[in-house]
Length: 158
Image (cartoon, rainbow, N blue to C red; front, side, top):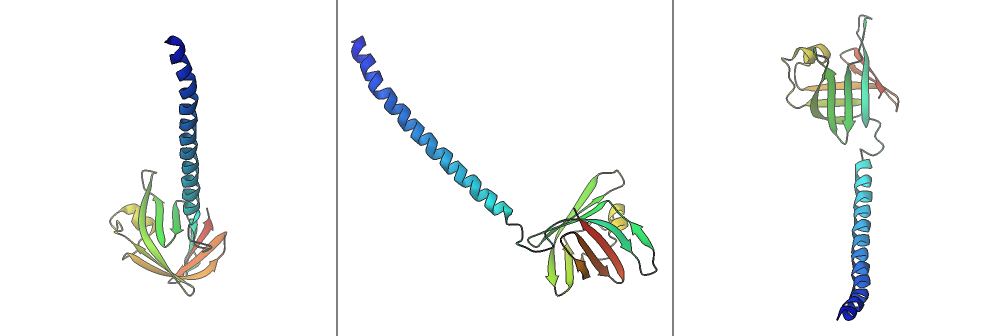
């Protein structure tokens, strides 16, 4: 009886292992395919639009010739979505979300529920309402210059 049991085990164990290996291989292939698809979708960040990415605000150039240096404000653009990151008084970053619209040499940013009472918001933005339209003076893969009522916002790609 022992001999028959051992022979049956020898016959069925390899078959079971082979089936489980095939199943495992199918799962691995499916997982790799899903990972590849996920990578492809995540790379679609807005096509070849020059806006896509994160931009660091470097300075404000005012009409009277004064220049205010800035290094704590970032704008991010992707697929019509907008994010602004700015440093508050505690030294941590806060963010605001919204969306943007491109026009002929113009950019309009719409913020969702800006915190207009926040002192950091007033310092770095000071927008009276949730929308601001800029004239695009320069836009390359490395730099961007936007004009709002003769005040120039100078950015670098970050």
